[in-house]
Length: 182
Image 1 (cartoon, rainbow, N blue to C red):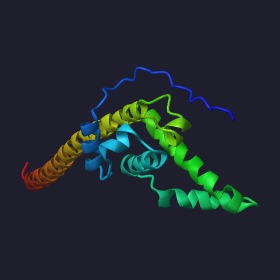
Image 2: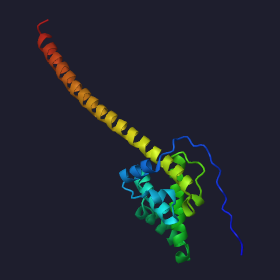
Image 3: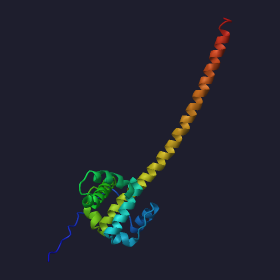
Image 4: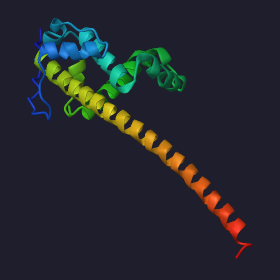
């Protein structure tokens, strides 16, 4: 009987602060993702994949239904569709998830993080994703605020252009009336 040793991933300093389990649960709940402290401290493959799927949907708008169309297109070109269907779904899911992790500052995200999650590492990855979500929300609020100001300024500029056109028309009318007198 062979024993499989789990290769410990090296601890890499990431460019974001770690969050507590309570903070992570609160952030996940704010995104509409149900998670218990136990799911974070001792994650199972199923609980980790469910949380990651919720994060993909919340942060990238990449839900299972959205992945089905490209999968169907790819499968239509293959001879043994049933053989590749599940593997293709997982590969597409992992590709989106690793892209999200990279965007969130987790550069060493691997298949092990999805298939055999470890508590400390899982919380660290989630911390990166939650920090990104907070950053995105802050910037979205700022963008919305600036966009509102831009619209207000554009409306004001349009109003001033109309006033200027009106004044120029009045000047032209006055000039026409006074031209024959000179």
